[in-house]
Each structure stands twice: as C-alpha cells, then as structure tokens.
Image 1 (cartoon, rainbow, N blue to C red):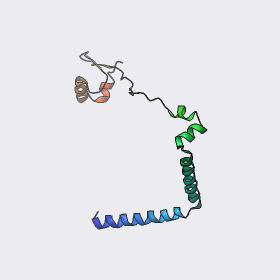
Image 2: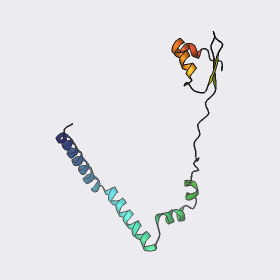
Image 3: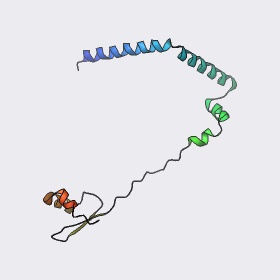
Image 4: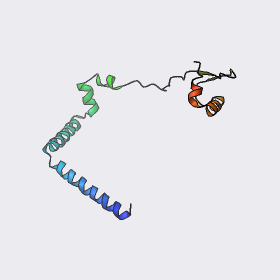
Length: 121
C-alpha cells in the first residue's frame, strides 16, 4: 500500500472516530455518568477516602473473594509409556513420545499405520 493511500485510510478512520466522539459527547447518559464520577471523586477527596476504602466499607468480604490462589507452576499430565514390538525381529521399543530413532525408522520403512498396529501397550 502506498504511503498516500495509507494516509487517506488513516485520515478517514480518524474522521469516523471524531464523529463517534461527538455523538458520545451529546449522549445524556454519558453526561450523567461523568457528572456522577466528578461529584464522587470530589466527595472522596473532601473526606480523605479512596475507592478501595469505600469498597472495604461497603463490602468487607470483597478482598477475600478477589484473591484467587494460583499455582506457582502448572504441570502437565505425564505422557504414557508406549511399547511397540516388531513382529519379525521381536525387537521392543518403549517410548513416551514419537521422536524415538528406531520408531521413526520403522515408520519410514513400513508406514505409520502399520507400526501403530504393532503397539503392545
């Protein structure tokens, strides 16, 4: 995209956002909320209170509910051990993942579906 096209696009977005801002400024509900917040903050300052003081005053249990214990380390479920037995040679391969060297060789030679059918456990 050229710089000029990018500029025009951003200019159009800005004009749209300014129009939305003007519409919000005329909204009576927003005006009431702004007036309420202004008066509330003035009242809090007059009495030397903060919003946290008011929350503690109105709902003493709020602090205890908001604290959620988080585990220090999230552990994943351990992978299960898989055992494959080659039907011709009788060789056993035990692995927890699919990155085993011999298992990869078998899958390359015989195919993944065939090797999966050799699974013992």
